[in-house]
Length: 149
Image 1: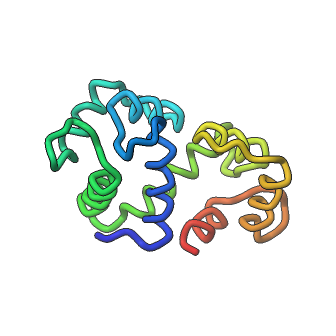
Image 2: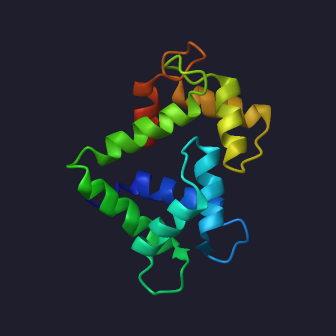
Image 3: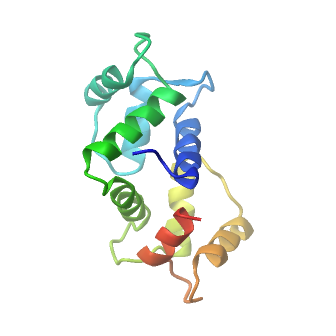
């Protein structure tokens, strides 16, 4: 199942964040670091195995295109619920206290965890864009709406 334009853009941004040395490829160590940041327990060995599945050119690294193909393959394997599940998992990684909402502090921490150092003004701007009802919290529905724009 191909990714929507928005989801593809988000996955490309995620890849760029994981590619710490800017070489256009991700090592197992970089992938493991990124996965631990978002709360997934994949260790370097599991990431090496994951990269070997995606590695089309045999260089033992994962390029952006290989990463996107792996994400799309994962979506196909999940019987059409992949993008929804991906959004839900991403929401849960932002919702650090598990209360079903993303507040300003959680948004800032999640963005910092992805290597994005944003000002309070930028975080406020993101909150205003996503928080449709103005209650200073991003719900799952608001998060989905933002991801699907």
